[in-house]
Image (cartoon, rainbow, N blue to C red; front, side, top):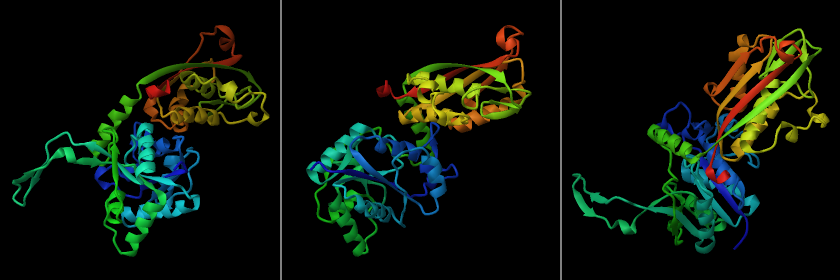
Length: 393
């Protein structure tokens, strides 16, 4: 069996134990919503086709914000009153795609690796129904009502089961439909439902890092895990110059600052954002701003430079990385940048999707020396620190 593989991502829970004021799947881990990290792993896997998300009714707005910029996601489907009902809703939507294999995964397991996905798909093709499991490292005791040990279990025969759980699509869809018709809605995972329907379920090797994030302590540990996985730390530099011309304002870091002259350029001549774009692309070894947005292309004439910075930041996220820090220095005699520093920092942070504490903006003059000292133009120098998974090197 070598046909299409699809995925259902269950994100319809409330996640109240995690705190944070929003459902846990939308909380950030290292600056990125957990659900986005989970979905990216599936969307970027070469064997997976449609990825269907199931969300709580009414979460459409927060969901759109969390997944903005991710390509290839179909519209989410509303979940039901139970996890089982939510999975069934996702499976029913996928019937129009006719997949052969489906992976069912919890949005709250963001550390999904390509190796684990490979094993899940391979196991489902062989067994029809398969789940990842990990060995229990500790001794397990069974206790009675008085909290007295009743038995010591043979842990060699026990596994802690994870997701993604993988199935032949028709097999698990039929099991879900039969359970719903029988009025049974209490299955806590899809393997148990498949077992009830009479299917043998195989267990393949899971991963200790494939943890489920549930409590506030889990989030703290997940932050540490995520940062540890981004061990390829890179720095890029950017430099940009624009000359003054006619105009009544300059664009500095996405902020319109009134001035007696404007800066000339094919786009909006935002010297700060242009330098930042080159710094990020440099950290990625991914060319420069001119390679991606050539000034010879008329579509970029007068374009707002926030589009360029958003593009560069998305290139980082596409490689499962994060922007750790952005720093820029502006050199000019006028206009004065310092009164606008906080607004510029906030705007850069908003475009890049990072906390404002990770953005530094400085301004200086050249003491009347050179072309900046003569008031002929402006310079910006930028540095970007980016963290990537080592495998992305």
